[in-house]
Image (cartoon, rainbow, N blue to C red; front, side):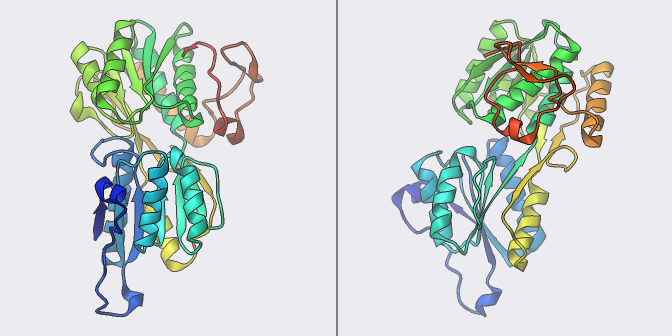
Length: 357
């Protein structure tokens, strides 16, 4: 069973709690699992994929669990209220699914020491707070490889959300991979300053196309940029899920986020008492990051190169961030043959040489 807690209810401060009738022993009451989302569950991007994970939990455990979620929660004071509301409603495990929810998660976790919390893409942990993330940069490298092969102008447009390491890392991985195919490749970035705003995303795509970009990729969550690319006759990549249905001609592939296995596992651990705080960063090898099927338009050379890169990443013989690597200012960031550590990646606040942002 599941409960939807609306933003209106949240802002009103009401206790939007599903009251379970005490018709049986308390021990048999469903285990409460809550989710806090930054966007709408219908965005077909980041939030949609997390909600697919929630549904996987329901499918795995049936009436042993009760899930609930609050969508469209802003990264600010609203987040603390939303997280606290789920804890007060009786949820025993709460997933907060956006970088800007990190501090509010830590804050509320101190108030509810017997509740388990999991924060996506952050780095602050506590005894009852774990963190988890996916190595999206691996997928960005794969689509960058395809872009390098498919772009006739040698220019790609990148619609970015906010300048946090996760996003900067993705821009760099995409550009480095494309540049290996075409040394003169250019990646032009427009910051949308939003995770989800279809109008702004579409306008950004159109502006990039006007600047000569014939490939559009994004780290924002709607399909609007893809649809703009379809209308203008250029190629594009989906974000977080397979978005081919929105732009069947333009959509070359997409990074697909799959949280289902992680959520099912962590709920089991919370229910059986084996849950522990920690940090998980899964990638293509772990199945957290996948690639949507390639469009028929993707050339044989692009397919082969993309597949080879995925195999190399899985085997560990290829790392998307391998030196020699310099930033925009010419500063050496990685020596020849050196690969970036997770610490370097998690703090990345610089662009590689050639990114126009």
